Image (tube, rainbow, N blue to C red; front, side, top):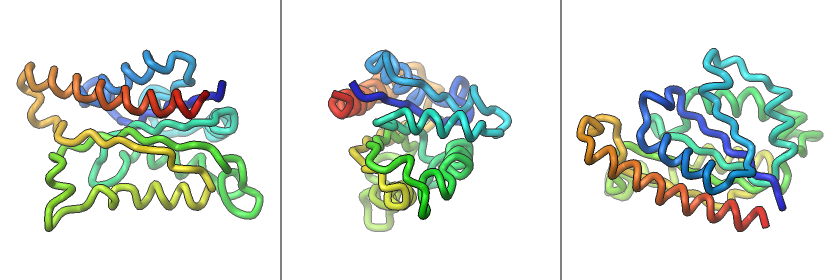
Length: 186
């Protein structure tokens, strides 16, 4: 069976994210043999252990990135992880072939409703993937799939029923991602 690495990049996971927390819990329960990389716990100071992270990537076949969309991109902690770990000579460049052929799967959450990403004046869903497509192109990984859970803004979590609804939606989305990663790992 192929090895799965789950990297979650919410910088304040415990306090700030009902949806990401529920999705992460579901992913880890459905993919119990996956290696877990919770960046907020490993690197609260943003000082990434590059060698350790590169080793995890090399040992993995499927990489699942789970993160909230912050201003149309991944949070700073996850972006720093990418910048520090995906180095020329490791992941790309003339000698950088460590990630060639690895499968990349995304689980993203967005506070705005889906209609925001579909409307006439919107940033379209595909726009959110532009940086990821650049990473995939440079590293020769394969973007094997993605899910975006829309409309889970922290601003409306003051209501317990809404929090429960967000958590259930997140678990449902995580099940789709876990199923895809599980199929890829066979």
